Image (cartoon, rainbow, N blue to C red):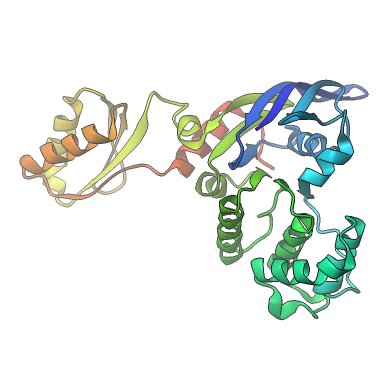
Length: 314
């Protein structure tokens, strides 16, 4: 468990962070969302013990960051939002260089490098110059660099920035693998759909303040009391019948007609009640093509746009 307690950071006349309180459960993939100037990178740097807060405390279990920065840095792997690679080194030499910085004994380095290259699927590129790697490969190599000392916590600043769709999928699967290995992963990103698919928990930040945090489902439901239900009907002439039926069901509100034969509604009940609603539609011989709560990514984006109105994501 990471506990962030009343953290503030001031740069001359600018408050980068203001009284941020947050808990990151062990073993989660935790997303930090926010527009330019929200304070995401500043918070990550404080967690990495690279800068000290103006006030407040950060606890990694029993260790406070400002009191034991060297201990924290051994527990944390930090991947900044720029590559920081050395173009005249091969992928293996690059990892060996950072293994040396972390004081890993030479006899252990080769095994660690081999394992990391296999983990990030770059074994075939071990003797390739870093400058010739694709952006996605460089991102995976930088992630391997952050893992070279086997940290408990990974801090990733915009890890999916600039990646093509395939590379993003590969990154998502890699992070899930790391979570399965017991790592706690904290990600800063503005790619909201990716965070909804990737993260177990999220926090939304705005102008240095923590606006909202919790598991993805909780945050996604913030705009309303429940989920958004999407139902697609096969026959246009049965659309009105379906909408009237839904409006009479307790727990359903804001029933609207979307594109084509799509019906959208807010739903506050349980999963079992969802089965009951579907059964009622079928009992009325209404041909249902699809019936499901809307995916978390769209709702998360709505929440983000609502509470950061007037700011553009970054």
